[in-house]
Amino acid sequence: TGEAGIVIGTHALIEDKVRFHDLGLVVVDEQHRFGVEQRDALRSKGKQPPHLLVMTATPIPRTVAMTVFGDLETSVLDQLPAGRSPIASHVVPAKDKPHFLARAWERVREEVENGHQAYVVCPRIGDEAEEDGKGAKKAKAKKAAEEDPEKRPPLAVLEVADELRKGALAGLGVEVLHGRMHPDEKDDVMRRFAAGDVHVLVATTVIEVGVNVPNATAMVIMDADRFGVSQLHQLRGRVGRGSAPGLCLLVSEAHEAS
Image 1 (cartoon, rainbow, N blue to C red):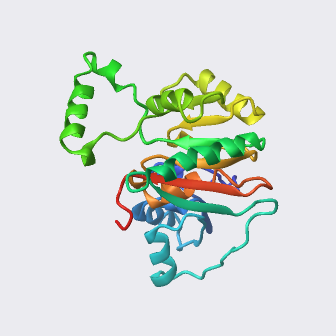
Image 2: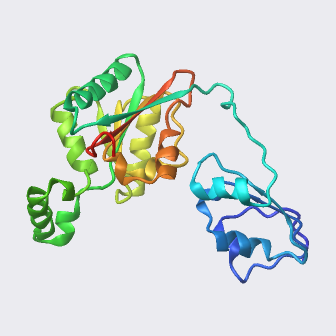
């Protein structure tokens, strides 16, 4: 009816049921999370094509294509937000140079000793055996991995956390966070991490958006070659959010030049 002047919403605004009185301006934040047709659907809700402002800090190919070939004026914000520090990113070729991985865990320890915190991100949770009932899936995956190391399952949060507690990060407060945990449990872990009681958080990509802990300065992404560019970019944005410089280490078993 035109009573609401501004509507702020999720992808729900794209639904057919949603009708606008006279749509004049569309602002899309995090545009890399919208498909081509989704953006078109939003634009087609105006009697006249509305003005469109798309924003993103994630350099994916489509964004680049839109800015180069699309009918878009571009504004580039090339400075870090006030109070942010630059993030150094390095690839850790775990297979070709295992000592690099050992050094990565040393770096995490150094950050914690300096009063900071760290994230370790894994592609998988690692509790599939219970669902499967007999652990047959696990055995199958193990066999495949023995036959061809390239086919090993992605590293899992629960296994990596266990290994770190016993080995490289023994003595530090290591906690896990993933999507299948109870919401109260998740909140509790995040609260303790934000308060500084947890030194290292081993998590899935649930931390990709909306997590802001300025004291977290280091991130180690395991099996980094299994994530997309925009995911890596979003994950990396979780560190360097305070005055201390951020460090992001991409651990991969892919060969160096690949």
